[in-house]
Length: 240
Image 1 (tube, one colour):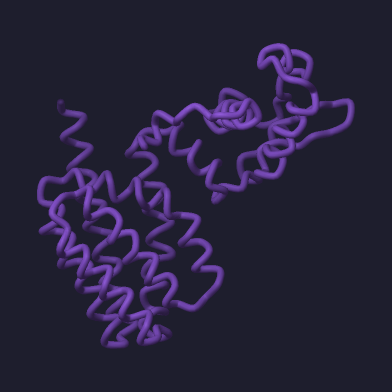
Image 2 (spheres, rainbow, N blue to C red):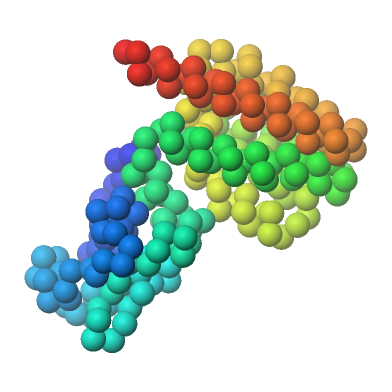
């Protein structure tokens, strides 16, 4: 599925959540601004107040709005949004260009992934090492960029799991969608397979050797190269 063309939701409740969520995350509804009045939204969507209020409760749970008696629903400041919520992340990706999204994600990856690789080198069990190695071997057998995506994601998830830190594992899981889109972008580089494998092999080797500093360094190198690949891909797109 192309995240920039989200599929229409099946239920009216889900459609309301998606459309209002996109309105908020895109900035068309600004922090501090009230959502349209209940009566207007009920008329626009052809739904009852209970259906609309249930949709509003979902937006409240995602940190996007604050519902106050007699004041209605008000968009909360951006720094209060639950940015790792899958829907909020999805809508955010949908509202910015590829380069902006990639660079924002790369900052987060540089903070998290090298530290996770170092921790995995210290904490991984034999089963963890087997999973990381298996993911890499499946990457090496992938014959197309599309086939490379799943094992590449599995490689990074396996490293997060090998940290045996519940918070890191949770963050890794929640960032899977964003990481998938990041990999899809860099995989548009014509030499993606030849470039990607040695970088991941260096991370694998350091973790297998129980070398935290080497794993951290290899992860940083991989991310630096991913940024270069993405810049080359985007440069070619802008020149077309």
